[in-house]
Image 1 (cartoon, rainbow, N blue to C red):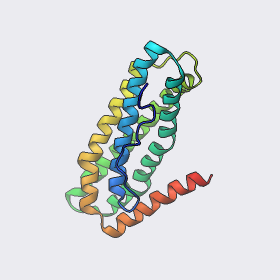
Image 2: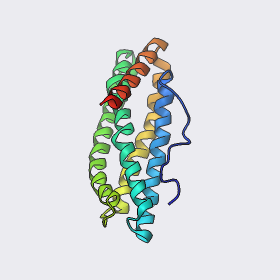
Image 3: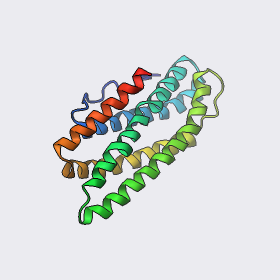
Image 4: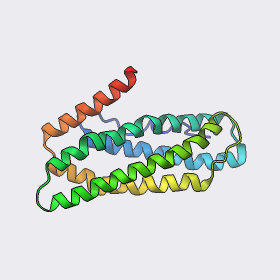
Length: 183
């Protein structure tokens, strides 16, 4: 199975440009979703062999850490910062958008919990009940979610947030990851 550890070719951006970092994370999520789709086909022809186990571990590692941090970045820092800038027609749009994206996050987390249990079996080398429907539902929801963030949320954030506010968000993102690695 090639590209068992996707995401290494994603754009290198840092916390000093938090909106770009969130967008780059979307690219890495999409690569992990592609790995999941390839894993289904691989399992059908090769079972839970070593490449399948490694791919399952890599996907679990990514969605357990980086994707989780991404949701926290948005809900704890980006969304509140945007809501503080609300004025005029942006107010209704922002409230609806952030509430809907939070609902997406909960749905993705529920789907991930189910998918993760099945990936654990693959990672352990045992027969897996992982199905195309499990993966495709998760992938489709993420694709729709990412499209909304990139088409609506990030452009709005770029328009409404000051450089100072973006710096604060970037610092919070860095601290979140630093504290996670210190544990």
